[in-house]
Length: 356
Image (cartoon, rainbow, N blue to C red; front, side, top):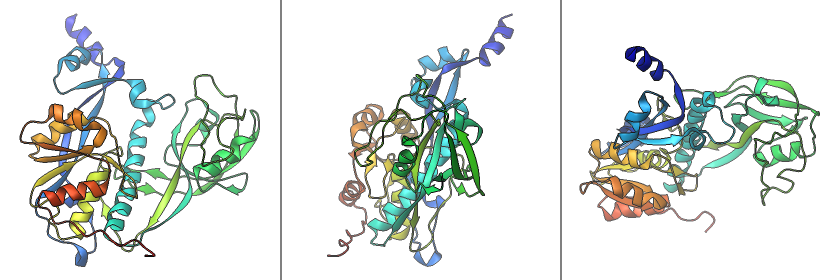
């Protein structure tokens, strides 16, 4: 009976997830640039991830006493409207967006011109049972509403602001998706018709955005998607990043450093093994991430001696770091490069301002 109970408990998922240390791996093998632009890399830049697993009834007690495990309520991982079934697809989409931002940030810092244009709004989440659930999925791009182009999230919000519950809305949708290599795979463009519903009490109303007049909730009908502007960057030459089965945006900073290291002179770290975690924007701002304690354990196990983390999370990382691992809190790519220069790394000069 005990064996049967254990087997059953191992198949009963609770409303929790557990974070545990993942793998810290070198970025250099993931970076692909034209041969004539690549340099031999000395030292190493590591990206790191965590394992995210649904907690079972059997595993809860074990996970709760593990020193390097963090149990989180499902709502803290999924948010108010995302079902667990969309979590993997969201992770790959976030990695695709993170890779694009890393390429733009790295090449801009190296003095190359990088242009950008918005192509529509990408679906990040679909509320189960909503009007959108039958026609939209994570990774698809909505390019127009009622024939009017929706190149960014502001245009998308405005296009729905005056349409009430019961209204039929015609969408143009590119049936793209993000795959396990964090590539946004294009698909055919199709026309879809959706009847808006009443706004459910379980879903928060959209907040107004100062830079988007007319945004927010004005009694409009409910579509049931969380959508974000999808930019496309035009690079001066091809830069590839080949990750496999890694989701989320937290490798952005590490990938940016890896690209710079490959395209600069290969000695950005001064021969050290350096790890980094943090989101990155195309302009080089570093943002907070999840799982910093577990990532600190992973990079120490991988032999890193320097770890860059978002400034607000430096205390958390240091609480897990041994004396052999120096932790730096940073808020920008420029700050990371200044720290690497101080540590003996070879850092590219700051490019001149365009137009000066």
